[in-house]
Length: 177
Image 1: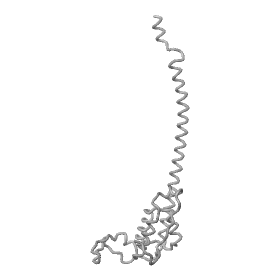
Image 2: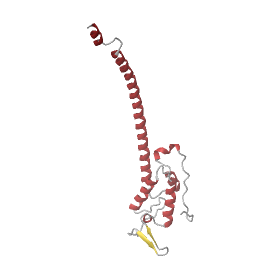
Image 3: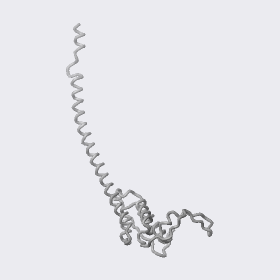
Image 4: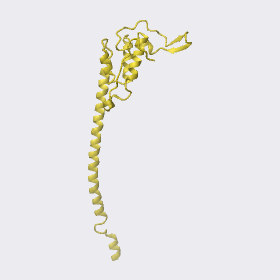
């Protein structure tokens, strides 16, 4: 009977002591985890704010590209703040308001073809002219495509580490294929 009573009593410094030590260790690690979570949350919030600000700036640039009096210097600088998709949006918006899609051109669009395709009897080919309809001339179309090809494809908020691109504009008489 004495053995049964001794077996029923937990040994001193046994299970209870170990579990209280574990709880103390868990409190310290949970405090560290909470601090780590707070730091990650703050970093994530800062990154999201940064992304939002860069996107907002890109939108303002696209809106400015809808103006009629764009300078070459402004257009070249715009390439640092937008992506090719932002530029395509500006071209489409200019087309909607009946301006030539190339921001440096001040011509209004007249006689925009209704068809989507053009058949060339010279080369015996069918061409999709959906994009070409946004421009007043072949030069404006080529110059716009030349500029668009030089715009970095990386997201605007990740360009701080990149060297700004050396963007050149196509001049009248220059060839770009």
